Length: 101
Figure 1 (cartoon, rainbow, N blue to C red):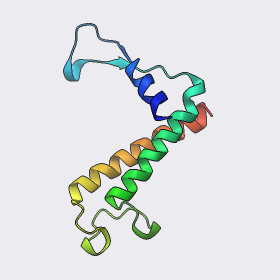
Figure 2 (tube, one colour; figure 1 turned 120 degrees about the vertical axis):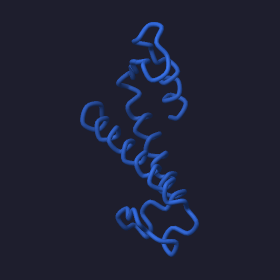
Figure 3 (cartoon, helix red, strand yellow; figure 1 turned 60 degrees about the vertical axis):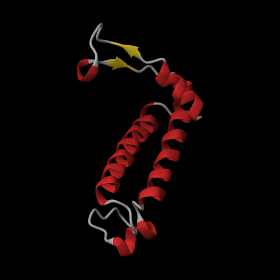
Figure 4 (tube, rainbow, N blue to C red; figure 1 turned 90 degrees about the horizontal axis):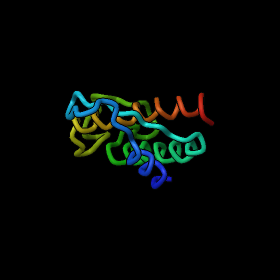
């Protein structure tokens, strides 16, 4: 599944000829039959983020100000950034469920 996602990302097309950096725009075309692989890969990424950054200690909702008793020595800024990635991936998964699967 991860290999399919990486192959799709490698096939990304440039939309802004000659532009680089923040001005560059890209188009990602994902074949419909790759939807399951994308969903699975994003789910694996979310599970790993949750485990590594203790995003939902004890199965509870995300608590941005959780103290060391709950999250140990995880850096709060890195934890919050991981949570934003977690939610971004969840949004993509929701779109895949609604429009692809």
